[in-house]
Image (tube, rainbow, N blue to C red; front, side, top):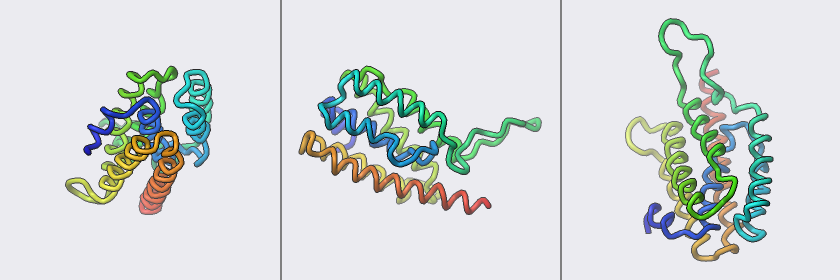
Length: 191
């Protein structure tokens, strides 16, 4: 089944986990630690995307990530411009997409809001991986792996319900490690 079909058929928990997994894999761009989104994963395990618990935990994660130092090379664009518009790096674009995923997460996670968010997170995560992939044209291995992870998360939740959350988190953790290594390697390459 295609990624689009999986998102279209996902229930509320699947949609929340899909969007959260995309965001979780992109945390290295925001300078957050690996555990910053764990409370949101816990709220899904505790009964789905319950509005109160989800909203409180989302606000806490936003506050932590807003105060985190961005990853090297994924900060804001240079403030001083010299005549022409300052160049914005691929890392800056990727970090902006990750920040947008966090900013647009629904505070009140109803199914319709989660569906829009999950779809937007899917597209943003694929674009982030496309920006950071080493392939000069087309979709390289980083993008292909991200697509596989997105499909895997949705299939795990569709097939196992709440029992699919732990393996979905493991898939996300693996992707986060890969992206952290890519960001680190790109920063070393610029040094």
